[in-house]
Image (cartoon, rainbow, N blue to C red; front, side, top):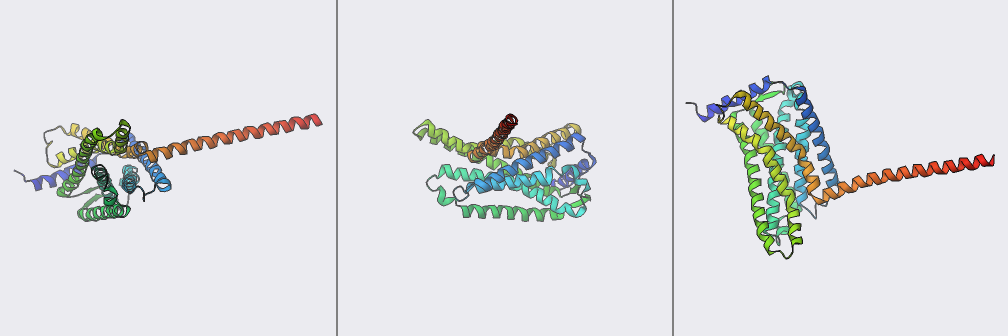
Length: 327
């Protein structure tokens, strides 16, 4: 009977060989390209609004949101857009390419966990929140998170074997398993914290004086709940399925059905990443308000421009009529 080590090595090789043999359809190429471009555009909008309008001194938690958006932006630009064209990349780009991909995705999941922890501290210790959470501390946590994950991934991917120029690499099954577990643990930890926050909020709701204050509290928590549930529903199924493949839990399943399931859940994962900035824009008041203001400002400027053009045309018409009467 094979031990876990042998199974992991064999499974990692099987996964890579299957993926190398598969060619993308035209639909898949456009799917990744379009979603990558949309995700890049939306994440840039979030970062632009944050740069122009968000006061991180007053709202240090926004530093975490900005970092999560930056991680999603890197995933969209470096990975999703280029996924259809990896085979034409020169070999020297393989190592930094995969390091940046895994780093950005792990940082996105970890930042979601930090957002949940921030809200937990806010609702559990409201009187001491601003002594526990400061701009300086949050910045150091972000630097530490990026640095730790980046260094960790650099070390893990140092052992990868490049079979084709940047199209596919072979990595030890133990490393695949570790990375997969990191994704799963961070997402489940975020959901657990969200459940605890919801429970505390429900208890606090009874002690609030009015329903208005209760609604205000849940509005503040809506971004955390929606982001966590969305990530849980779109990212976790693919990670769990991949974990099952590594541990040979689906050895009796038909290969075609298994492949279709992987493709389906991976597409869901891509859509989940692309839609993250939409959740940020429409569930956080500061981003939503500025986006609406920018939209109406553009419409107003366009309307004013049209009115000015009409006024100029009317004046020109009146001058023409007067000149005609005169002569």
